[in-house]
Image (cartoon, rainbow, N blue to C red; front, side, top):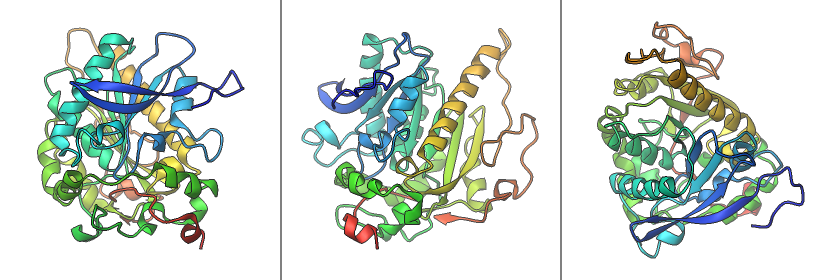
Amino acid sequence: MPDSPDTGVPDVRETVLDAAGVPLSALVAEPAERPPRAVLVAFHGGGMSAGYFDSRARPGLSLLELGARLGYTVLAVDRPGYGLSAPHLPEGQRVADQAETVHTALAGYAAAHDTGAGFFVVAHSNGGKLALALAARAAGGDGPIGLDVSGLGCRLAVEPHRIPGPGGHGDWRRHWGALRLYPPDAFRLGGGLVRPVPALEAREGPLWPRMYPRIASRVTVPVRFTFAEQEQWWRCDEEALAALRAPLTAAPRVRVDFQPDAGHNIGLGWAARTYHLRVLGFLEECLLARDAAPAGRPRPATARGTGPGTGSGTEKSPSPGEEERDVPERRGGGPDRAEAPAARLTR
């Protein structure tokens, strides 16, 4: 990737992580000043690639550039079965195996690089499954700082057979929502991000509602979920959100936010910068909780805040329906393919 002539713009370059002989391709951007405050590890959704987090449709939409500019290293990884790992894993991997592969790769990265306060995971759609599984496998104490997941719930808004996979692309409109939510170039550039959904990932996809409670119950780090205003793959009504929060009993903080003026592919739309700033804000809140925790005492659980960018700061649970305040009921989630050619997308 060519350097920007503007020296103030962080350089985004390609890199490769080693997962016990399996190469994981990735994009990385590093801050000008070292060490970084932390490392954001970003996992793309189904049928996408690491470039999802480096939108070039308009300046300012790239998470890699924004994070590096604000003092973080950002590492966007092609999940196992995508990118350079595809020839080694032609059918991909199930979620649990992806977590093992990525854990190995990140351990190698940490041995060779300064990671500041540690790893913080941001993930989209199917990548959120990996993020949760990665945190669950590390319940013994070597887990990430926190998780920030968008475009993933635990109750589908469509019949399972409608989820895209090798045998079908699904309804491309559900990936985007209204076309006005995206810069015109997003559809042309998004086509270059599309990858085939690996077979094992596709077969396991419909099982997620049953898998989620067991994985979520072992997550012991703060978690924030974000649903786009026009999320159409995953349900995000009051009942579905209660089911999403219920198993996360070991997480010290659980927050559910809604992103206005966005479709499922938040990171490719006009709302990308707003969403990414909220991601970094949540990371800073996680770091603050670490710094401010009483010495020698377990950190008390913070409130499970809801709503756009809010956390109540009290020990009180949100009142019924609070997460819906100022936000119309939404139903929608799932894979994130930019399937259709630009001609179809601009109808």
